[in-house]
Length: 161
Image (tube, rainbow, N blue to C red; front, side):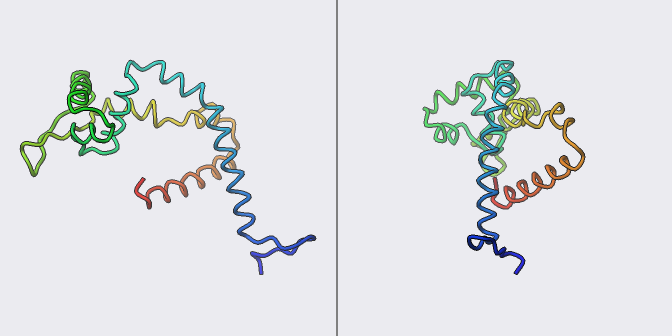
């Protein structure tokens, strides 16, 4: 059977090899994360947003039907605290308040294009995949990376991530 290889000292099935490759990928992921920290920190230094504002923006970008009360529950802070934080983000042009289509009393939060760009730049950027790094890879390596990333994206989409 092609999935089972007979080796001196015993059998080695596909599952053993999958576990081995998965462990290697986990190790590489940690190494890439550690080596990317200086690039990530650079983006954080350039922003004027507080960590709380950035977390709130990220939550609204992910869930574009968020409400102030929902965010206060999510982050475990008072409604007054979240209202002030959201008001500052509205004043900065990062969030808009819009009426809920089904209940005119409810105001939903929508990220502006500027908010989406900020979150993408700070949280969504993959510094390890910067142009300088990708330019150093061979075409074959780039294609293999693209194939792997497409597969990961597909699985994340299936899980609703």
